Image: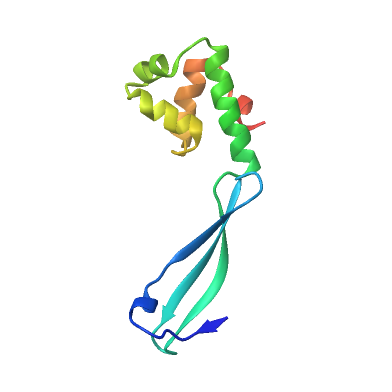
Length: 117
């Protein structure tokens, strides 16, 4: 779709977001100002917020902690991090990298495969 702005106010780039049925994916409709053609183009990009696999990983991360009988605060102390770090990892607000997964697995006495099955 092609759109020509009528004012400088309309030249601002903005984003409209639509959540999927279960919140696992997000589609963004983005307007971009094209200087060469003096117009705004509208297109859709898919962005994965929580894929099914990552949602399963997060569930396994929480389950492992609970099976180990630990609170977020206790895990955070063992990691030398604030409790909010564990909370953000478990909620998906912060992605867990391979090194951190190794630390979680050691604390919870679980193998890597427990988290990625």
